[in-house]
Length: 165
Image 1: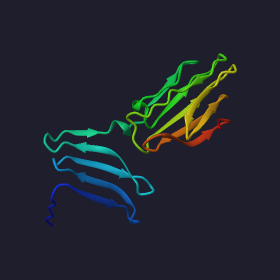
Image 2: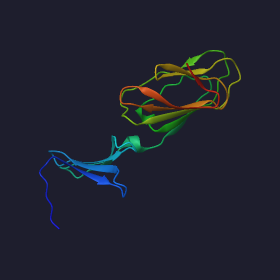
Image 3: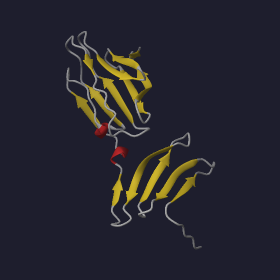
Image 4: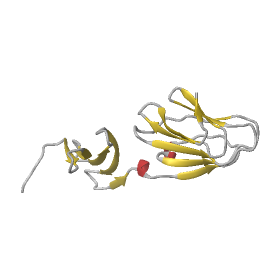
């Protein structure tokens, strides 16, 4: 079977139920990207890119699932390196409030972040702004999951006794 296409073009891959799952995109320079669709059929980030000139293959860094800890009472901030990852807050042992530095630069739609407060032995709590609300992690076991909508972080889940107001 012979097939040819004029650049640029997209080739969509469907599962057995007819749901879009992947897209192979070839641009004018013959660069090839493999992108996934989420369960709602919305195009997500590139998983793999092949340079049309050099043949270099680049796996997207945002496909990893990093894990890191934040020392007790340290400020909470994140970078694109934390995308789709888990951040464990080792604890709050003093009474100062710890507001997260909310970062959106470099993130793409559909990426997530998860936070978990391991211990709290004073009145200080961690707060995170998302969905126009303030999430408060105020007890051991509190946590939250955020999802990036392309412009801002939205609350996907709260765990423990975490609150959003």
